[in-house]
Length: 107
Image 1 (cartoon, helix red, strand yellow):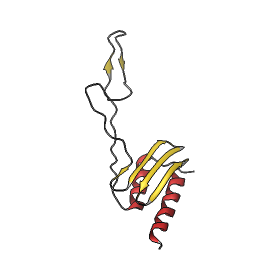
Image 2 (cartoon, one colour):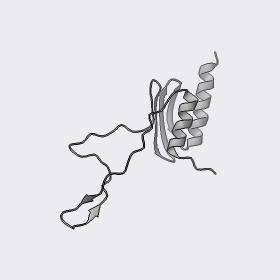
Image 3 (cartoon, one colour):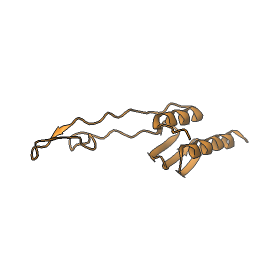
Image 4 (spheres, one colour):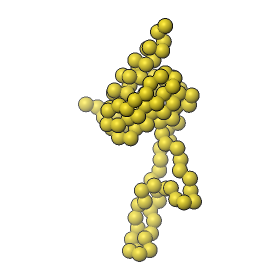
C-alpha cells in the first residue's frame, strides 16, 4: 500500500476539480525559553494572544473544503461538484470525487 502525503492528496483533488488549492507549508514555531525551568521548548503552535491564526489547508476557491484531520478522517464539503461527507482514506475521497464529477457532467 502506497502512503500518500497531504500535499500530494490536495494536488490530486485540485487536479480533479480543475482548480488551484491554497496549500501552504506551515513552518514549525521557533523554540522558546521557559523562565521557570531554564530549558528551551517547542510550542504546539505559533498562535499567541497577539498573533493571528492562518487558515488551514484544503481550501479550493469557489468549490469548498477538503480537510484532512488524520489519515482515517477526511471531511469533504464541496458545492461544485456537490459532495459532502466524512471519509476514512484518501483513496475513498478520490473515488467519491471522481464519481461526483461524472454525475455532474452527465445530463
